[in-house]
Amino acid sequence: MVTVQSVSPTELELRLHTGEPIVLLDVREPEELAIARIEGSVAIPLGELGARQHELDPTQPTVCICHHGIRSASAALALTRLGFRDVYNLTGGIDRWACDIDPTMKRYR
Image (cartoon, rainbow, N blue to C red):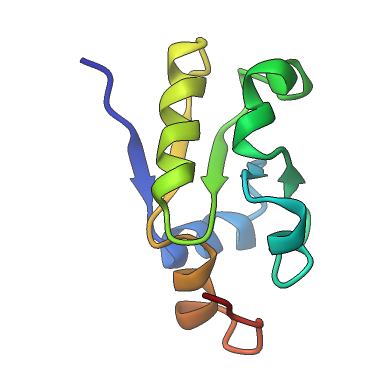
């Protein structure tokens, strides 16, 4: 059984702050990205991930992001099954990131 690793917003911020090379994969839809986005993230909607996974480096640590962490968990599982070695799901998604890390970030429902 394949399991997905998780990373909290606080852990992710620390890893980014120390300069760790991490790919932030945002699997939300374009209209969601227009509301809120973590700077430097790569946008590939979940429904396009299978066709566009070649745009990602399977050897790089990758953190999947969505609104609350449901779609990103699916994305992380899919990437793991495709042979990506170091994949994480952002616990609580962009919504939790806005609460814990960037309270100036616009939130949506």
